[in-house]
Length: 369
Ligand SMILES: *Cc1c(COP(=O)(O)O)cnc(C)c1O
Image (cartoon, rainbow, N blue to C red):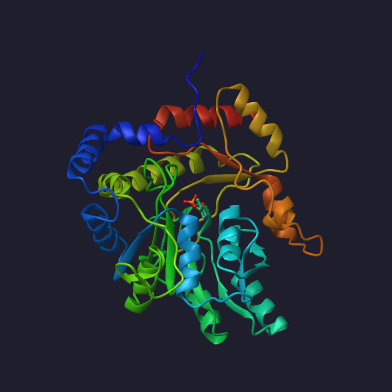
């Protein structure tokens, strides 16, 4: 029996840095400081420096990061927030948790990212003053067209909160995703490009007042201990996860380079097939959170690969407006719906060897032949 190839492998990332991570955990355990201490502070500084922003606020997870960023930026109950429907439910549940109403726009079928022209059209047609913000999702590791999106947002007075949960290292013209909007939300879920060994998230930005507000909201609205200045929550990053994230952050660029090499091997190896391969736009750095191919026979390909011990992901099989909790029969986004029916994520993580990738390519070729 050949070894199984899995879509993501957080355990391999742990084992690759085991001695350092174990030492980091031991350091926290013996420090006596477990919540919002020196490790969180150090991680916030190091992540800001890596990203190229003034500040980072560690929070409990990526969903909270989006919610708290929206709230800090002034989204109020009843406001509408635009995003895409081919994202994880978290993007939309965060918008609802902030008290806002989610609103969707269509994607560009070539990249499967938010189509800025469609957004502009929607805003010009609706002229709805309740639409207050947009949450672009840098899906699969490629950034939305932020220069154009920021222009449109400025023209329509929209707040921009970037969903960077799949975009640790994505960039446009050398400027990273997460440095364009008023605030950006990151997730450190274990399978993300930068993953903790548990939950974690962060809000990043350049505006000290907004960051200060997120800092208060993550802990009961406190600026001073025991004095709540705002209606806040508990959404804290803990010291153990922060210490682990510091170890993993030091390896992130190298791991992203490994992901890029694997993606390059796939792009060459699968060139001759009928599959639609991922399109990397000019001037973009793709951080290859996912390697997503498209075929109308997606389920067949997935089953074929499974039989060969190769497991693939589907991000995402059902668009948000077709999920039971958020179903809206009046909505229709043909490009989004078609993408959800056709996408398949081939295994991609830094723990894969060239031989593993060659085996996946061989099996895909065997199926398409
Ligand atoms: C993972 C993810 C989130 C949510 O992050 P959690 O840490 O799981 O809350 C939000 N948006 C996108 C696009 C994601 O991939």
